[in-house]
Length: 414
Image (cartoon, rainbow, N blue to C red):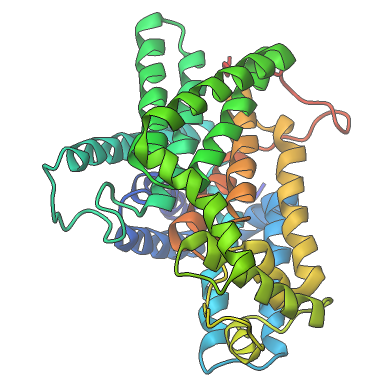
């Protein structure tokens, strides 16, 4: 076995702590994200021991799938016509995928994974406190809140997505607790997270993700019977919320109204209508260049040159599948779907049931969110996905026989 010097061991430990601290920064500060990412990269390289690191990466199918997708996006720079600077600019937005293999090697230790989850929980609790204070009018015009939505550190879509995932995490942590006071605490936090999605945020993506994660939680804990019961409770709760919450009702009604407007006239500036027009224009590009797409970073120029029935322009069509397909064609789209599939199928081989259910929840969160947003292009969502992927799949184990999990399929983590 290759010996590691004390200096390299200390450097590696610093890299692990910097990676864990990202759990706190991702929901709160882009600037801190960038500082910690730079530290992780520098310390990971300075720590040496590349033989072991490369072996860990090579043995991890999820890390390899992330590298394959990034490699295809990098190859997309070799063809296509784009505005000056767009190639590297858009490839840089996918650089989070390069951190997945680094995180995998840094989160091999179970205690470090637990520390990282605690940092994320602390950040989400702080986000909930800020959201409650802002909703009560106590933080009006605060420089700490997102410009696009004055109720959190992040905009409504991002806050809704993070809160929905946090609701799943807190619910799973509640089941893991052996004593009822701690179980009650995490249960309350799960309800607070759900409230942030439904009553404080205004993100329809968050509504959908929360509903699907609730169904996943029910199935993981109680099986098909739990799925049916929670499905019924969800239907009753959403119907009640629709009748009592003006904000929720307006957001749901807008989907139907705007979809009708899109079919009957030129798009308005409302989000649903504009998204539908973006999707239609993007599909034209995909159908014209189905195999390899138009090249990484080329789609803004190509969309500008595409004949339009309505004057709607965007450098981000808000659908990650279309963005990937436009840039790298069906090849890139298959690689993205392969990455999601590998994560979902390998989840039972993770170190604990808690991590298994979180991993499946992560795929659901991102895969559904990518239908209505370009999550891998967006800073917080893309980094959240890469960080949690590396965190959870750092504990990936090889089963004694293919397809046989190493632990019982219960969510308590014991």
